[in-house]
Length: 399
Image: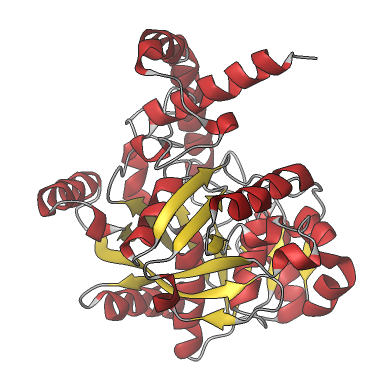
């Protein structure tokens, strides 16, 4: 077993490596003792470690190219679902706003008179079986088992679209068969499946974060790219998120880079907009102006914590931010420390993200009354809604 100092050093080194791979992962505002990044003097070490990963990135890239070629030539078989399929994914590892985009796509499909069902791998779940999510099962399982069976992203989607059919499995073909047999939808929406080529799809929607659309431009594990940039040519729609958090020149450069790999892609700009605060204990909602001039203790376990803390600041809160690793499950001890810190620091509110809420099952009843989740939605700019609906209609009608 690693000693505590060694484990602490490893976690700090990991934080620095992630920050070097993607500037958006750098620790913001204020970090807890166990999440503080290493000082700049360690930059040579991190550069050396990342350099050692380059051969693995080359091997990873060769594997991706080989797999894609096998699917393209038909040597690996694909599955055609019984109804049209739309995929919302990204080309990088890390948060790009994909979950809010999945929710938006499902909402738009419903407005178009369609009956969508969602396919998800259920990131972080503890089992591999195909699972069909129902409200009755969620109530029977309870928060802890629901998280283990479905994952936090799925629970976030289910929380926003209560009656939406959702099927969870790493095998998307098996999930598609189960969804079609159980719910008879007229369109499937695959969450985070851009690289899952076994399941045929009729429309690929790629998400990009305007601030660092390709991270450091390197493939995993040297960088955060899941596929080479030429894979963008498979997509028909690109949604660039958080466009209000970069300069017009940076946004234009991002657009140009995407179109360089796919000149015909439909390019849509978007922003993330908070919609309200929801108390964890009873789902009571507060207006966003409740944050104004309040001293807020904010914590989260998401890919880009700085975005969350900055959002609260823009809403007028005086923020102290405590970041945790992405998809972190909060222990009773960590929650006790946060609660103690709130009281000792004289904070008015404790706020986390909507995505973190399912991972707070260790909150006691009293503690859950003191924690609020910030709900966020993605909004398409200019005529983005019309162009996305047009792309959805074209993909669905041609099948």
